[in-house]
Length: 186
Image (cartoon, rainbow, N blue to C red; front, side, top):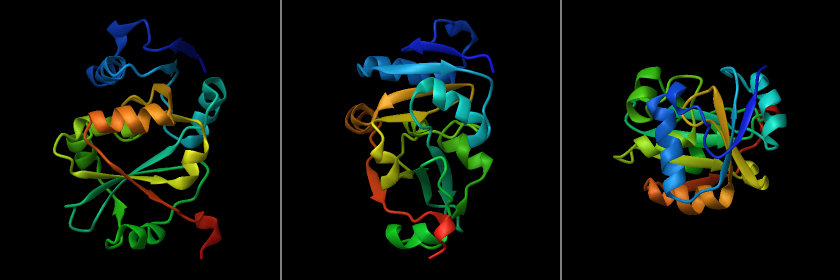
């Protein structure tokens, strides 16, 4: 895998999508320090393992979920190696059982295509229709590893900057949940 690492934004802005550049522009305007690793598109957590080693921080699994009526949407961050089962999330959130939201809702609300889901997409949810949920286990790392709305680059941002600068700037709060690993089928 051909990998390029940058302090801050990649130097080749001409080859970047508008969605990706908007993430860098926002992070820069907020004074957030970050690293970027550019790589071949990564669609699975297994493909992200090489990127994780280069980035030096775990990459979170980002799940875009909705209720049966497709009126309530949730973005969940969990550790990349954690098995997720929807039945464990409903009770802590006080909602009916959730399922994965479709590509159309993902593109409409987050302006992200499947395979690129990221909390950076919350900057595009200007109506705050998405409830942002973080599994406590991901907060045990110093930094957040996530895509800048495309799966051919990955960012490393401190949790402090993400929670205290990025989320307030995009007008989103977060809920912390303690999810068991799905392997523990409690």
